[in-house]
Length: 502
Image 1 (cartoon, rainbow, N blue to C red):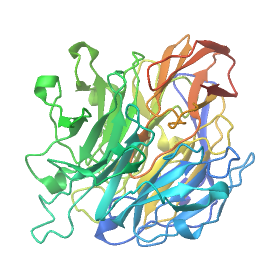
Image 2 (cartoon, rainbow, N blue to C red):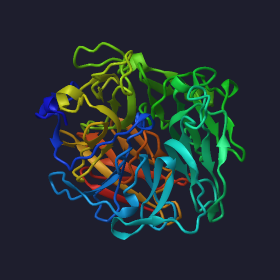
Image 3 (cartoon, rainbow, N blue to C red):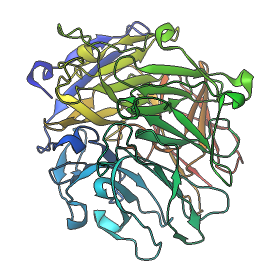
Image 4 (tube, rainbow, N blue to C red):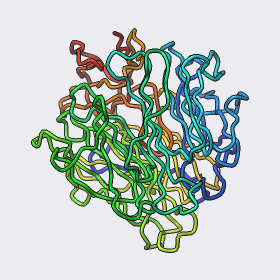
């Protein structure tokens, strides 16, 4: 963390005067994401447990520097050491996502690169090797997005890689967008990827069962800086032959400088809202179930989530948003939003001193800015990030990857709210139950977590599902599995890790 934010700061939230939101900077080994124009974007972190101790490791992109694995050695205090196996020490990495491709209970890695992407099979004690039997084929791309889901009756996941500008096009870079690549398994292996076109320079993609139909569709967020015109955000219906949703289906067209996607049900109706980062306004879109289609309506100004200009300092130019993630950082039972910010490089029309945002949700559903008071308003050129409980104390901690500056880790040492961590698994190929939903019923209403792989900006988190519970002393919990079968509601006490097994 930069010196001006190294001191511990405290925020007493408006919703609960007894609750204090506090982060403190943690010293970790130095790591910097850097490089030329291909690494102006990217800079993600994969958060996952690779040695079976229930503490998540960090695999961090390096760009022109080598990617590194940070082994989690935390007890009460969060600590890491660098211990990178040869297979993970790579040049050109823009990001990575953890997932269990082969269903053996060990997390694998989809590694995104400027170059050939890499799919690595996890071994014991954080070792990795190339898969030798699934015939994953890749070429030299500028890859910046990834998502995965399990489709019906498939033992392997469907993989989607979001590629950005075709840097080999002599007429580029403008209006020179590479396609999104879709790998659908055929039995126990993959063939050549299907190209999803038209393509508009994606920077973030996410499979989500937005309609609770049992099928995940693919949302794509695109950077209008390069497609220039005639493009828009996209949602692909994942039928036997993928097709784009249109206005006839209820899709509302819009174009932004799309950088990252976050998805979470904020209204309690079980359907996910969407937060999209961009240059200028960040977009919060609330799902409209009345249309029976893929309709999200803008609620950015209504909810106070624009985050469109720096909230610290005197740089009044528009902000540039990158990673976005929902999470209940003060355990009051309401989801908050963390957003990384940072100029692309030296763009004169955008803010150069652009602090990250921590938007805390209040009881009436409005959001207030809290990052400076909480100590996480870094002025570095932030890119990827992760909200994740790094020491299993029930509080979401923070990891931020910065372009040209060191990696930041901040421990959440807040007080005041109860919590629950839910460990979900099933005895099937899709062991992590991707595509399922975890539901917690409290006196405040229903909290829903969709289990997904993808979104954010160039990195993601797998592991325990975190719920803030406020002052609840007893809640009900169930899992809706990916095939739609629901477990029975269970009464559980807060402040514990609960295993849900199928």
